[in-house]
Image (tube, rainbow, N blue to C red; front, side):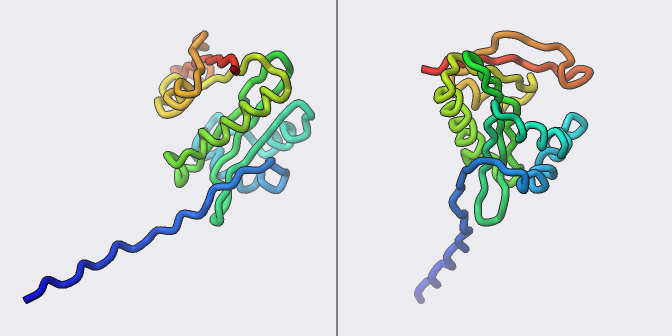
Length: 161
């Protein structure tokens, strides 16, 4: 008697991740991600509109065939750039989306002639801290209660090569 052929595992299609400039029409898709990740400190749609209107800002989105995966923004005032936000939808985390968005912000900072990039990150956000450390960011300060009572921020800096 021959053993039956194993049933093949169903294939899960993961469409390619694409990045591009963030536009005003992306704001409505960004809002659920913003709320899910940042709760009471989430930006409003008006804050996104204000950011996109500034000439010294660079905002990028990552998407796939199913929609928006994440977004990131940078304020660039040479010689310093400041990461304003990086957010990745829970459905897209651990897929390299945050790293890809950060790389685009670092490239933009370099093109603008910035010699350092700063950011704030929740002190308890272990996955973000791990990402930033692998991208050569170092902790330079702590901001107590920055995100609210008991929610400290770590200030990190990277000097682009």
